[in-house]
Structures are given as C-alpha cells and as structure tokens.
Image (cartoon, one colour):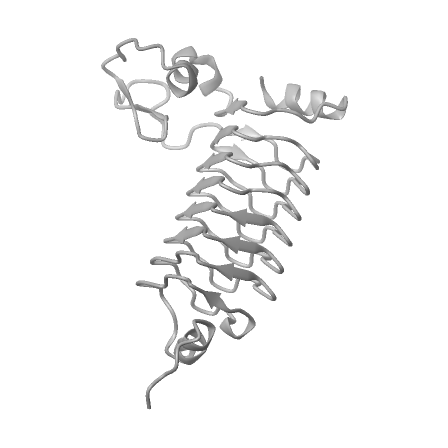
Length: 234
C-alpha cells in the first residue's frame, strides 16, 4: 500500500487500517522486512541485516539501497485522517506533518523517526503507543489519551498538551521546552532526562512522577518542587 492508495481508501469511507506497515515507498518493496516484523518465518537473515528488539530490520551493508542517510518518507502530510484506526500499525519515517488525526485510534501504534509536527491529535487514543525520535513540535494534542504511552527522544516544542491525560507514561530524553501544559493531567509518569526549561510548571501537578536528571532553569526549582508536592527545607 502506498500513500495514494491509503488516502483513496480513506476517502471512500474505509477507516480500519489496523496493523498496516508504512515504511516509506522504498521499504515496502522488501518482503523480508514484513516477514521479520510480523511473521517471523524462522529463516536465517542475510549477512547484511539483522532484527532489533523492536522488530526493525537493521541494514549494515553500506552499498545496500536502504543504507541511506535520509530515506524517502511515506508522505501523508496535510491529509485529513480523522477517526482512522491505525491500531498496531508500524510507521517508520512516515511524514504526517500538518495531518488531521483527531479522534484517531492509535493504540499500540509504533512511530519511529516520524514527523508529526503541526499534526492535530485532538482526543486521539494513543494508549500504549510507542514514539521514538518523533517530531511533535507545534502538534495539537488537546485531550489526547496517553495511558502507558512511551515517548523517547521526541520533540514537544510548542506542542499543545492542554487537558492531555498522561498516566504511567514514559517521556524520556524529550524536549518539552515551552510546551503548552495548561490543565495537563500527570499521574505516575517518568520524565527521565527530559528538558523542561521554559515549561510553566505552575500549571500542573506531577503526581508520582519521576524527574531524575531533568533539565530545568534555576528559577523553576521551586515550582518543580511544588508540582511534585515536595516541601523545600529552608
């Protein structure tokens, strides 16, 4: 399936794309990628690739066509995909810049090296989804459901997290500078090594949240302790 086919089927009324694989136009040509990701045929892999813990094929042959610095993306930018079901989908280097994913069902969806900058995810369900090296800057995540969601090395610069529910989520090594967190619900999350500089910590309570090695400004120390409900000794 390519981008045009997905959009055509969506516009025809189809909403269920559960478990699809989107790797960009070049990656779809490799059957082995799909076999290793989902079918696990038990066959020995070629010398030039191996499978990582997330099911991604890693190519180590510098002459292989996939060993590129900037592979082509599966382009769904500026598309209207409201209410789409991408549960369990595997989205590698997918371009969803400025796409409308309001109300989308994205549980267990894996986003790897994807671009969701300026995307609309209002009231989307991304519980137990996985985001790694994803650009979410200026995205609208108003009232998004993020239970046990994992965010690693993601860019949340200027992301609208107003009324977003973050419960038992991992938000590690992420850039949250100047994210909009008005009435954002934090409960038992892990913010390990994330950048909170410039974040208005007066707007939130960090219930049971781990803040080990987070980056903050000196002027934010008191607000962080208050958000954690920690009394500061004088």
